[in-house]
Image (cartoon, rainbow, N blue to C red):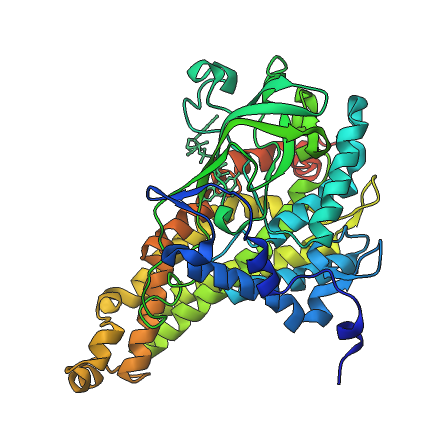
Length: 489
Ligand SMILES: Cc1cc2nc3c(=O)[nH]c(=O)nc-3n(C[C@H](O)[C@H](O)[C@H](O)COP(=O)(O)OP(=O)(O)OC[C@H]3O[C@@H](n4cnc5c(N)ncnc54)[C@H](O)[C@@H]3O)c2cc1C
């Protein structure tokens, strides 16, 4: 019998609708010298496209938790598209993000919920975008967020300019020609040129979004831009890195065979941005304010650390099962290593709960998580997740190399493999499956990319830890010291 949810009209797309939506435009995705028209048509991109389709199907399988009525027309939309108005909304959103992350064990960081959360908080604080006469840009952004929600778009984003010379302002690098900037304007559009890095998920996106990622000088207004464009917009080119997807069985590469979300550099070759797709143009003060004053920091970290919690839980599961399989779990120092992974997992979970417990309505009417636990995690997570990889290596030892492939398992040596690869806690097949999975997590091309991603996707730990210190409330620590700096009365 159909449930009430199933009878309600829905704007949330299915996997098939997502795949169909990638057809038809003249997008320029370049991979290893080849121009790709649809990810399903390229063997190195096809399986991640199917994973993305499963992400879209997931919201229908968990409709009770992942879908809710749109405030505009009552159609069901993914809850990550909704502007949070209460603590319950944050908790509901976390559950939806957790379900999405669990599908890939946290390996895909840029599933659409990442930008759904970003644009929901941007639209919730349209007042910040509207400052200093940018009412039209703010209205465009609000309309765009509704479009994202109602068409359930898959979006990529690119907020950093290329690494030409990080010691100089962007306008002074390579004659100012490499960083994305405005080069012309008519009544209906602006023209932009330059490049940005990176755009994760590009082959699987319907639209590219551009918003601020770094500070710029007051005189560099041409570089202060925020907008969104369909992926097939003329002049827009995406150059992918090597594919880390392995066209092998899920036995051989359980993660790399399915979860390479791909990263690309985006080039703008005199691209026309229609004015109704322009959110910010020229205001260098707004360029930082839309990041600091919209609450983006707290909201995006709510998404990011929910995924990180899932990934840490997965790593804990791997370490625990590796250690039990080969019996090393009996050694104290292995238990301590597993305990360290548990500590990180639990501190992340506690940070999420604490952020929700301390959440409040901000001055723009959006429910904002307490960002203090997130600021602390933002400094630590880029160190924790790479360290977890080291701990897993120390737990698994050379076992990661004792991993014959599916072809070996099915070949003439099958009986010998069954005998010589058995472990105390598992038969040979299960042991090999587990070690191959763990190696795909820490040591394959995709595993290495995952480690780099965790170090940098929210900027680097060094600058984020310094920022956390700078903006922290230091009044209580100061008062504790102050009391001893005066003569007792
Ligand atoms: C796998 C992956 C996927 C990504 N996906 C996306 C995406 O989808 N969208 C997107 O917009 N971005 C994405 N990024 C880019 C990410 O935003 C940047 O990597 C991040 O902001 C750091 O910038 P950078 O890589 O240019 O490094 P850099 O800024 O060049 O830093 C390199 C090193 O120099 C140091 N450094 C640089 N500048 C300074 C300074 N001023 N002071 C002190 N130290 C400095 C840094 O601490 C770091 O150690 C992705 C990155 C990775 C690795």
